[in-house]
Length: 558
Image (cartoon, rainbow, N blue to C red; front, side, top):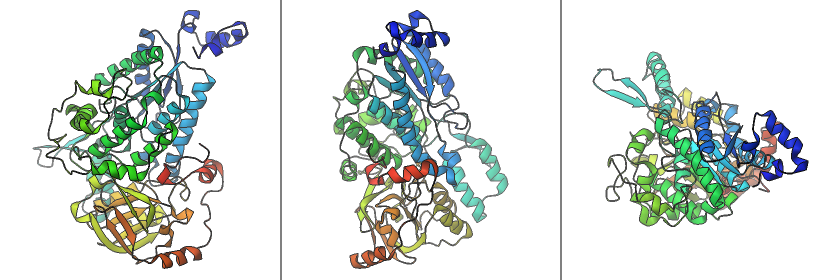
């Protein structure tokens, strides 16, 4: 066992003394030592119950012959971090989480790992760390939050909503179409308890894709946080990690090129968050697998979009779960998947899918009745984004799939938000938010406040927004992010001026400004050298090391 390095032999007497100080017995030390890497936090609704999940996991490990030790990584709540300096730290935290997994697993010589995760950057950070350490591992998420509920004004129906609605209601309140009393009522009911926010935002996208990747048991992505089924699944994960240990089945045996392609194909059918692109580029990099933005367009072109969940549709993750969840969706597109890939069940994907079936055709459509015959994410290229930009095309209204308009240029998220709140943005405009990329932000902030206010003001069918930053999974509308190269690296987005005409053509995967190559070059040459916005602490180091969004915003040297 790997743990023998810390517990066996005469010279390890001091080490054993420390284990005994923890109340462990000699019999426990003779078993495999399993690290339970938890991201429990009292500041994140998606993580506030993970202490209970950990207890269920430990019970499973004990029952299957292992000795569990719970340790922790950091976690950032993207909802709380939105719209202020906190969001600069969100994406940057992904690399810290991956590093902390490596440190914890290697320093304590664990024999196997169980990862307890739930939200946004924590999921990919843990996957990256698991691939780096590469010992038998399994993932168990805390599960999705239930949708908020309230009676309609006529008391005849129950209305359901989630956090994305709240962000949009801010725009309605600013526009005077919703009262502050109505907003206050929904504030208190939209997030009814623990779990990752109820729509197909980044957290639930990544949890569903962890299941599709084969690192989580069936149901990992969709069983509600408050359900007993979630706790049973946690116990099952604790049991199963011991089987993975006995078989010596490791993350790199599971996360292969075929498995990553399966996962991105599932993402296209599911209409997931644009952030999945950023994270799976980084995961593929850690796994030693080639994946680039052109691959994603090729996958999208052959994958039908079968599920449209909030914010793009009216259904929530709890509905997706009742409809059969990730396994049922994958079975629907099984002819496009490599069914021979291995999963943490110890079975192939094809064997797992034998038991799956769709239970609700309103939530998971047939191929013939697909929302679109093309997948839910699209990568755009052009003179404004030579290395690519990403849009959740599943969430774009038909009338905004092609749009041309004048640029309204802002060099920070704050400037754009202030202009939107003042009512300065008009129908037809293309809002440009730049110097918010991985290096320029630094940290590549999400523009959820801006996109939500535009939607709340009724402008999501009239105004587009483009940025070298990124978007929350809760964003909808013609919102194009990850523009690469970013402004801070001298990308063409830095050359855009107020009033320049921007052309967006999502069906033909084009993003361009109506300027000649010579004019773009002259403008870029005349720009002063980029001055970092942060000159101290972790963000300074992050900005110095981070690479482009088009390569997953991984750090140089990783």
